[in-house]
Length: 112
Length: 115
Image 1 (cartoon, chains in turn blue, brown):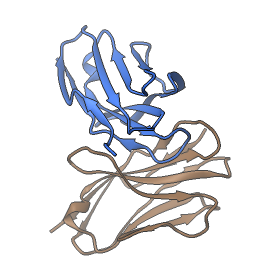
Image 2 (image 1 turned 135 degrees about the vertical axis):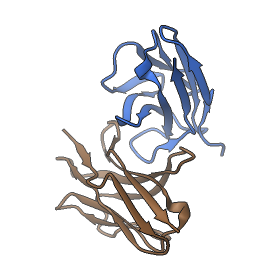
Image 3 (image 1 turned 180 degrees about the vertical axis):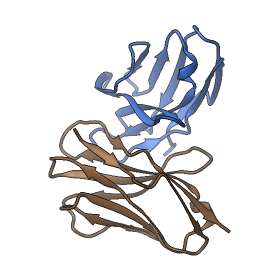
């Protein structure tokens, strides 16, 4: 089976812009979770989607949003980018319930 | 609130030595999963080992083994015969087994294997 894929791998944006990141889970996996990873804050949970519904949410401002499509692919959007949003964004998928998460390679977002 | 604590931010060991990474967690759950994930410099996060809390036997994967102490809420990772390729950030993680809850990660331990 193909692994979790994330596009794009690298992205450079300027403050105030918005960005959309995409994640395709492993075939058959219905749960997709998103994480923000920065050197200072470590790995922080953004949200989880299961069957097109947000099932869990972390403590991030409303500028961070996501959605999941019927084929389980997920997107996350960050509006009005700030310098502090520069990070590695990881997505992970699981078949459905709590269990091993399979991670994608990440999207490195740089905000100038 | 459920928490995962990794008390060693950074460690260095010589190649071929054995190293143990510590992890403690706090939960009122009885059934849960515990994980160790590895994130090498390439940034791809991969699963190292997984433990189900109801199993008393410690999980083992080749050179990687855990010491799971449920009563003490401790879940340490032992790497035997360490190799240069083991250089990575290691994250301990927890998730309840029977609830659709998020996985909780520790802050990680940066491990350097020295030649």
